[in-house]
Amino acid sequence: MLNFSLKQMGAALRAREISSVELTRLYLERIAAQNPLYNAYITVDPEMSLEQARLADELLSKGEAQPLTGIPVAQKDIFCAKGWRTTCGSKMLENFIAPYDAHVIEQFNKACAVNLGKTNMDEFAMGSSNETSHFGAVKNPWDRERVPGGSSGGAAAAVAARLCAAATGTDTGGSIRQPAALCGISGIKPTYGTVSRYGMIAFASSLDQAGPMARSAEDCALLLNLMTGFDERDSTSLQREREDYARDLDQPLKGLRIGLPREFFAEGLAPDVAARVEDAIAEYRKLGAVTVDISLPNSRLAVPVYYVLAPAEASSNLSRYDGVRYGYRAPEYADLSEMYERSRSQGFGEEVKRRIMIGTYVLSHGYYDAYYLQAQKIRRLIAQDFAEAFRQCDVIMGPTSPSTAFRLGEKGNDPVQMYLSDIYTIAVNLAGLPGMSIPCGFDGNGMPAGLQIIGNYFEEARMLNVAHQYQLATDWHQATPSGVIV
Amino acid sequence: MSLSTDDVRKVARLARLAMNDEEIEAARSQLSGIFNLIEEMQAVDTGGIAPMSHAQDLSQRLREDRVTESDQRERFQSIAPQVESGLYLVPQVIE
Image: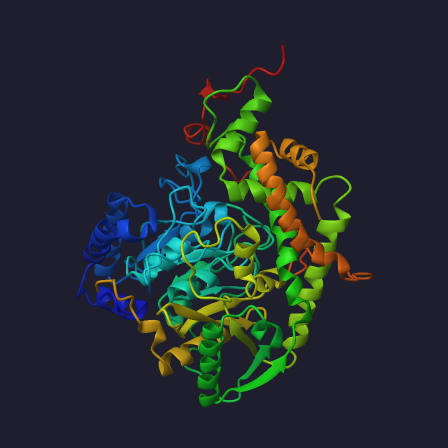
């Protein structure tokens, strides 16, 4: 059952071969026994999960189930879920019980999927290793001395360790794709504006986008069907016709044009990862695809641009944490400004404070044009590079991350080294394009490598088709970490 | 680019973050490294390029001016650090 696809699991539930309560208990027991090994969850609440499972079983017995009814899904702790502690990985929100549901949570609730718990993450989604979480680092199920990636590291580890059927993540600069790659799972960040940001704790609003993390592209398609849709409470939510992201899964790939950006295969890429990505591309050629050499000349500027724009937006978004209406308040202070300063200094971790300071600086008087405006202009150049590339190809492929999972603590003291682990993912967020990562083999240490697939705007169904066809021809996505008992 | 401790102190004040001298110095060195990375942007000629704030270049949607939120004061105040008689309490600011 633990290795069932979501489609198979849904069928077993509808056939009443297993109840949602039984399935939820199975996962809750696994979490109780094995989560201490991985620290993938911040909060589990068996009573709340089982209550949802009982409701799902009622629907299932009445024959009113939807595709994900009764399926236990882990929610990243960035999504507000009514009655659930929602920490965003921060001491600032350690005791915050969300008074309302995020749109994403509402969508899962409407389908009567089970919220299995809230997954660990880098504090306020700022990190690429899950080490900035106030609740401790997550351990990679493939090697517990290594990081799972971040910021959706708890979600990726939970999927890889079979501690949930599927999970949600969010991706501002690579936070779905990079942990998916490092933990050997599949994840997709859809086109900006496709999934509502309502109730998703804000980091960098013009880049933040939620998406599914699961064991296959097919599972991701089913989850995306549920997560997307217009929501008037998010001012950047796009008004579009609903679509079935699974509709093209079975299309053949003959004639597919794959763009290979030369900048993604240059210096800085680990040889093992390069070799696995090249193997994957060879497999695509066997499936009938052709490759086209392309160039994204401004992509080298993506990291600098991102580290202006994302901290600028973050410094503004995180100004709301003032110790007045909710969140942490320092125990001692003499006056109002000391209350603000101490609450924020004690409530935020080092990386969050660092980014707030970068953002505050680049937005401060006299520097706005040189940093923020210049970054927004280069952002357009980066988006134009992609537009040019998509005249010559249908999808773009390359590595998701320059290396496989690194050791816990390895990049601890050098923020710039950590930032460079998102070198191939960030440009996609800046352009607002959809991007995904699927497993494509292992390095010499047995750590998974990820293949990144980038599509044009609203091409998610095509990307999922491209990923699914590869997963029919290969079995990397079915590999289970050796320490994980199934 | 190298930031001075005064620059960092000023930014910390603007960001409402209390930092001691040791923290200021640590932040100065790390922020300087990050700004060295960011400086790569300055070599790019962006004359005539319009800034891009959103991928889809949408204009802001308008909605009817009607009440959409119900009163949930008690629910919201139940998670506040300090409230009294329906009010949020902060240190006195006016004598």
